[in-house]
Length: 179
Ligand SMILES: [Zn+2]
Image (cartoon, rainbow, N blue to C red; front, side):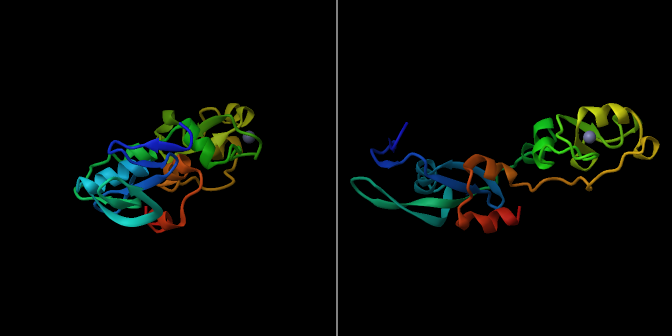
């Protein structure tokens, strides 16, 4: 769909306009079409926090298209939904650099091997190239002479927002920094 999309109420909006949806707690929850955010406000399921520069016109009203809305009731989100450890996520966090030698990484490695009780969590999983991964095997760092180039930590919880929109509007930034 290029250019303009027609909304359910016979209104037209730029198709690419997006709005950030916050939970009642102000935690970023999702990114939706601006049109969808306007419907959330109109149906009183969300309150308008920030307007965009676009205005949605229908026969009876002109409504600023939301840039940020906040839901009126709490949506419970499983913590894992935004921070699940995945091969793709770990490689993205470590910018595809092996955390042992700096070469390009294609695999992920559990710093403390799972067979030794290591957890599948952000602080125990790093990007690794195949040679380092093979060299390390099921051993602890002290036993194989490898060293971590940086301490692995969980990525920013709002990384998915950046992924969803590419460039994050300035209006959204305060809500993402708190996440
Ligand atoms: Zn390596």
